[in-house]
Amino acid sequence: MSRTFWRWTILGTALFVAGPVAGMLTGLNRGPDGGPGASVLVSEAPVRAAALTVGAIVIAAAVGVLGGRLVSVRTGLFCAGMTLAWAAWHSGRLDDVLRTAQSVRPLWALSIEAAALAVLGIAMAWGIERAGRSGRAPSRGHRPGVLDLAKPMVLCIMVGGVAAWGVARSEMVGQTVAAATAAGVFGGLVARLATPNLPYAALVGSALLLAIAGPASAGLIDGDQVVRRLYDGTLFALARPMPIDWLAGLFIGVPMGSSWAASMLEKKQPAPAPRA
Figure 1 (tube, rainbow, N blue to C red):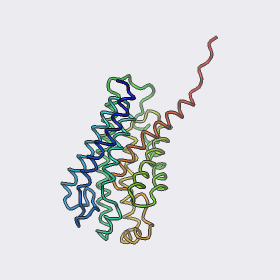
Figure 2 (figure 1 turned 180 degrees about the vertical axis):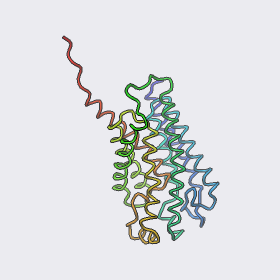
Figure 3 (figure 1 turned 120 degrees about the vertical axis):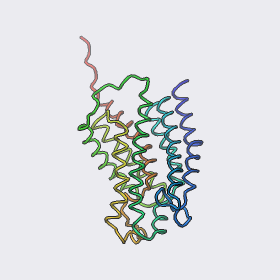
Figure 4 (figure 1 turned 60 degrees about the horizontal axis):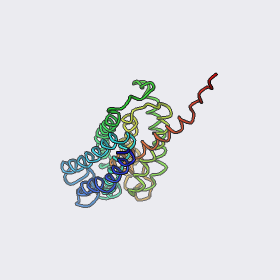
């Protein structure tokens, strides 16, 4: 069957089947007070919350690998992100978490949680890319070494952080996922322009450092004033997206930014010299 058929079939599966199931799983999590302000480590049952969240991520990974294998790596990443967007939509919000705790402690827990999800996110991106490359001709061009990764990854973090900062104006899930998506789009764009063959796992992993740094930075900057900062709208912006928001947004945004970069690089290719 045509790739177009599979592209729309897998995207529809992500949006209307896998996504709602992933959202149902994360929606079962409850905060310490039994309310909706919950994440994995800030919940009434962390082990149960971890199992539910990992279940949602596994579903997203399965959709992504299928999309990568049958269509393309970018399609696989995007469909995984759309599945995770449902999980993010049904997860707790930072304002609920902080109002319940009335302290800075949840920010440290969210930073640790983001680090754990970053490991899963890198593994998922690697698996989707591996599935997408399986059975196909290897990409042309120089494969970046360890030192080659430093510049594009730093660019991805810096540009992605600025983009997320500009979008994350509140703790509402639409804005937080959009902020992470913007980080993926613009961070992925500049990183892929600098190093066209940069692995997607490196892109996702570098941008996910923002998910770890955001809550930790807010804890250091705002300290005991974090709840007041929340109420007056001056909370450190990169702390507003929850860890699952970052994961969803980056898997949506990174393939978009990479596609944009690829189209720009194609336009820059010199025209072949005329034959004599």
